[in-house]
Image 1: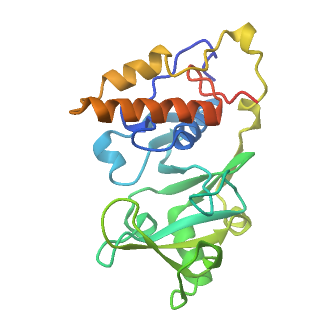
Image 2 (image 1 turned 60 degrees about the vertical axis):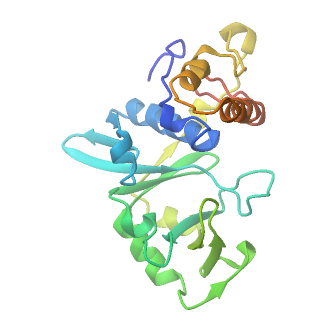
Length: 243
C-alpha cells in the first residue's frame, strides 16, 4: 500500500467538474486495495475511459478492465448515498445502449459502505436479464426495482433507461469482495497535517490544468469543488475519508 505521505495525483478527468467527488474517492479506494492485494493497476487514458472502464488490473496472468461504480442516491435530491440497491444503465437513449451492454469493461466494481463487490460484466448482464422485467416501465425512482425507469437526461434532450437491482443479488454472484474499512480509519488531522481545503495544491493544480474559456465557469467549478470537499470531508492528499 502507498504510504499516506505520498501525494496521489487525481486525474483532471476525475475532479468534481466532471464527476462527483464520491466517484473520485471510490476510484482511489479501489486503486489502493488492488495494490495492497498484489495487483498491478494502470488507470485508463481519457480515450479508454470513454469506452467504459477505469483501470486495467493484472495479477498472475489474469487481467481485467474494471469499471468502478461509487455508491449512488436513489433520488438525486436525497441527502446521502446508499448501498442496498445499485443503479444499472440499460440505455442512454432510444438508439444508444447503456454502460451495462456497451461498456468494454470485463468487470464492474460496485462500492458499498464497507467493501467493493466485483462482478464479471457478463454475470451482471445475465443477472439483470433474468431479474428485470423490461416490459414494466415506470416514471419514478422509488418504483425502479427490477423495472425500467425512464429518466430525463441530466445533460441533453431525451430519456435514459435505468433499473435498480438489489446489491445482495450482485454479491451472490461476485468474483471477489474487497474490504475497504481498513482505509477508512479515523485520522488525527493535527498529527497527519492533512489540509481539508480547496486551496490544497493538488486541487489548484487540477483546476489550473483545465482550459476554461470563461472566468465565470472557472469560478463556478471552483465553488463546486469547495462544496464537495465540505460535504465529503476527506483528505485530498491521500483520499482517505476523515470520520
